[in-house]
Amino acid sequence: MCGHAYFDASRLIALAISQKGFDMPNGLITNAPALVGAAENMQGASIDRLLASNMDPRVCRPWIGDDGRSYVINAQGNVVTANALATLRKDDWIQLDDAIIAAAKPRLKLVADLRARGLQYSIPNGMGKTVLQTETMSDISAAELTMDGLNRTGGDRPAFELTNLPLPIAHKDFSFSARQLAASRNGGSPLDTTTAELAGRRVAEIIEQLTIGLTIPGTYTFGGGTVYGLTNFTGTLTRTITTPTGANGGTTIIDITAMMTQSRAIYHNGPWMLYTSPNWAQFLDQDYSTAKGDNTLRQRIMALEGIMGVTTLDYLEDYDVVLVQMTSDVIRMVVGMELTTMQWEVEGGLQKQFKVMAIIVPQVRMDQNSRTGIVYGSV
Image 1 (tube, helix red, strand yellow):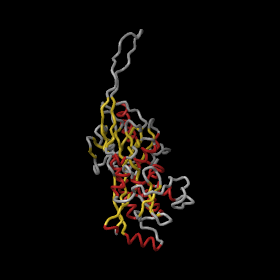
Image 2: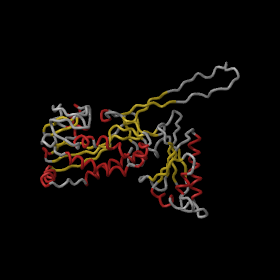
Image 3: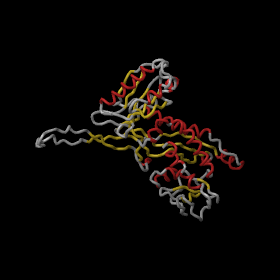
Image 4: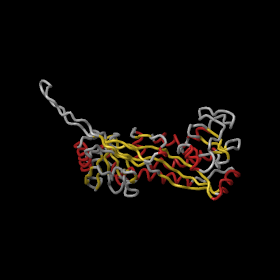
């Protein structure tokens, strides 16, 4: 999922304009959105274009075609003329997108892992929505055993309760001056994408940190709901674990199996991923035991029934570990907008402002009995 999901939105223009036989504006682009000639209100201020397109960010990604005219992809997925809005060539957009995505991918380990396992929920036109409303459901009472089946059991039914999940935008700005763009265009040299890479990295970092539940950025509250991460969620179970030394692998196994028992005790039976802080790396690939040096500690953990994998998260601290049941009723990523970049003009056109942004939000979940399959271990 990490290898493909990011690319859908941020490379849509690149896909549309990099096909062979690109000839604007007369012919259709093979295997790309259809071309129409009208500008379709793709002029004016960025906010006007966004509102006219139902908040589709693609309308703020104009490019200069081979014929010198400006084009954009509208809300229907068609390539339309955009008059004099564009300042970047198609290759400039491709270069920016490649740099931003390459910088963001390594920072999204947990997010990518969840999405790769299908734990995600996509919202069409996430820019046009501020909260996701879902329901929690209670359980019903147990069945009974009788010889004739005549006893009337409790006729209860699940109770439902509405909850709101805010959909904040993670974003970071960068800019190029008109002179920088002109120098790049006239000299044939590529744009310096260093700042764009940093912006993409910062957006990815805050999404990953929010999903983990770090003190910074912490939680995010809006519209009667709160975005939590794994470690700061109100329903997360906790356990004190022993600091690893490299010689106490058996104690580590006892701690992890105890965390699994905590999860099972509230009817969350796996399968689990174990996420560890970077400080664990020096011990996970050492021999599990000096008496039996055939397996590493990582391999011994993986041999536990129900453990799907062991992954290091860059932003977990100290010797923290998190055991997570990998099912959608425990956690999923809500995706309202993939990582993308928008552009507009300031200072009378002398500066081109860009914003890297995404709506990718963790939804950590529990039932109406406050039970969830997350156990947070710390020393």
